[in-house]
Length: 403
Image (cartoon, rainbow, N blue to C red; front, side, top):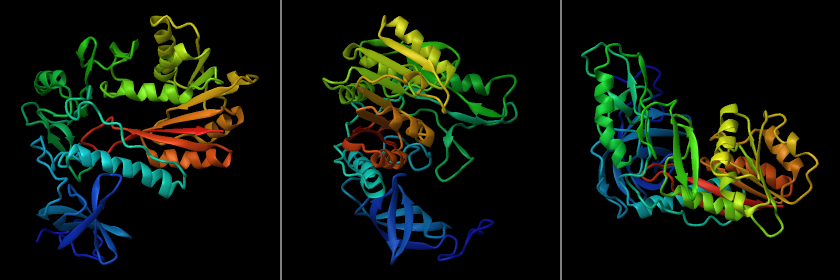
């Protein structure tokens, strides 16, 4: 038996204890859930309805983690993965399941966060699928660790279950064809570099200009009928096949006959605000990053949009420029994964938009923030998830609230 690692807790199972489990559900991290009597055991790469053999490698205070050893009874949702590294690479949790099953579980994930955890009374619509379940990702960022010249160098992603070890990735089936064509040369250039860094991240981003590897290069992407400029290393949604559908939904949810003003908070380069400009009398974008603020103004000029105004504000005074505005307004929120700062929510409530359209890559923090909005008199009317990242556990959700 392999020696147990330092700090291993032997309760309730010894290290590498094997057991058979019925899988009843998947977590929001894309991991199967089984139970040994009342004790929860999480096992990756297995699906509801399956019976599996698993081996425990970590015990927590209220659940255990185990490796999947064998699938004894398969689910009809199980399918053959496209990638030979599936199960070793930690990048894709769902590649061994049909795409229909992935969409079903992601809808359940949003429901669990909003309805069960957040207590919101709202219907969660079926997930809008990606037109391409593979070959969709327009940005790839393989990692590497330092080493001596001539020594084998892994360039890829974290190994499943590891926080440090990398698995070498020669090609990634969820990346676009152009990125996979450019990847071998980028890997060779790094391996043959005369001076190798201690570690870092490669960038391959497919944009209008082609596949770009310099994170500081100014690049462009077309969404709908608009062109957006940004630096290649900056955040910009990297599924261009479903992104126009997401943007159109946000714009539609923001507009009513009475609303003439759209406020785009966390506006970045102005994606939502500028995309909505033709349907509103005025667009106001607010951004706390100077780089994003300058990018939004540039994108307004490029697209000859003259009814959009952008402000640079800090978290404590982000709505100061809007004081005194009394016309009916909608507010679009697209915060980082950690959600909104409480002070931001307080200011948003004081501003008092008629509609709030909350875009989130983390439904759990979206549910938490929405509880604050509910207490202030807002009610959710629609939850629409989008699958920006097929084959992975990630899901984007758009929640519409009205006052």
